[in-house]
Length: 339
Image (tube, rainbow, N blue to C red; front, top):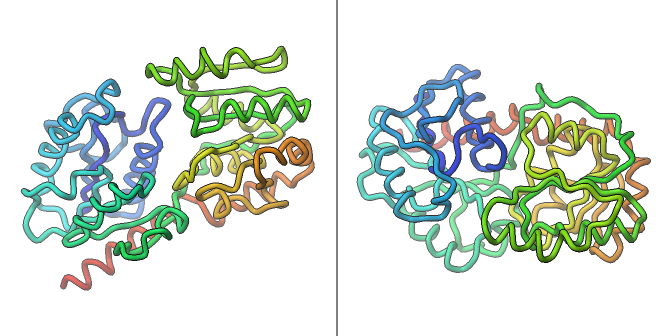
């Protein structure tokens, strides 16, 4: 197959640090190429993913994050490059609504965010001529009227992820510095459990800076350490030395990549049972799920869980190979139906 992939305009593929969607696109692109498929990736011009890149794309500009004009400019350039492919998988929100798609080429899109009513309405409109994929059952269950063709959980490449010992004597928090990610709750839970906490988080946009300096930073104690935003090698080292990832998510996150990343290093996940968490964490086996006020009592117990079982869960259920195979199967079925 000749597969066209369209990523977002905000971050390179793969991203240097923050960028969950871009990391998924990178994994798919590499996996498709390794499976012998032809891949064309429309991503910011500075992207280093080792597949052919669409010509004429602009540089990434995270300062334009969420700006529709910037996204539309990116989409016009991306679809202009897609003539000659067999299938297009567009990972942007508004791209599938673009009027000048290559005629006769099926378009697939993935719902990466939360299906709020106004967002669900957008996907209902595009479902007339676009195949829609979800990333968790929790994400799509509230909208049975939405024609979601399949749910495909994210996966990750385990080859560069070492299994840590968990002997660092601390729990860790990794995510954006925003209220919905639960950084403040993580600090409170760690304090209540008497556990040192290390926090790695993206703090670059004004709301993130405000939340950190006004809400989180004032409650940090002497056993807490904020390490800022870190890249993948440092992140996996931080996770691998932790005895648990503390993830008291405060919203129904469609899929928490950070949880499978921690499990890949052998580190159990202690989280609130929101969003996709019950589809990722096996309570009492690869971590613990409970309301935030119950997590201080469960956090220390995570140190006794089997780290090999955590790694095995990702290898069997959330590997890049599984995710790539699921997508290729879907593309083939889609093209066969079209034929």
